[in-house]
Image (cartoon, rainbow, N blue to C red; front, side, top):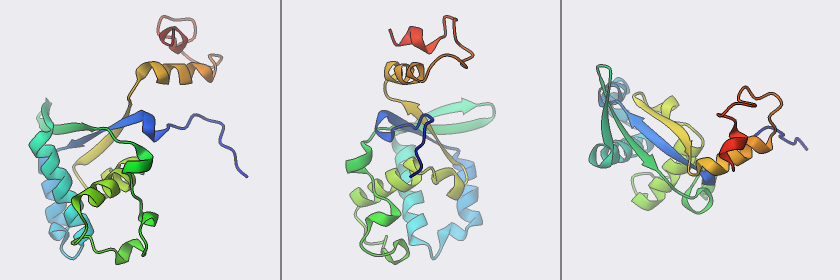
Length: 161
């Protein structure tokens, strides 16, 4: 049995900020022929981009307009993965999938498993802690010996108090 000793983020303690540059996303979509023949990618792209455009925040970063939104969900009850279905994922009919199940799949495979930026140009994600104090406690519990913040006002141990 392999035991991992380094810090592993518990996905239930993080949120995901999803970003989109609409121009790059549209370029990626057109470069992939509007995902013709790939109902899964068509539905994921349309669902996610529509949600970002309708309820995301727009920020200017240099000459680029970035749309972003924070998504909060619970990993176990709210996520689905390729292995969550009764048939192999390539046999799942995404055209008939409910929006609720599709979002669960997006949360699991594309947010938690970080597939989003690899499969869709112009879309990105970053994990952020839901509770900065709990994260500081976890970091501090790993010890301060090799930490560059040790003994400074930025020490994680100071934040956990």
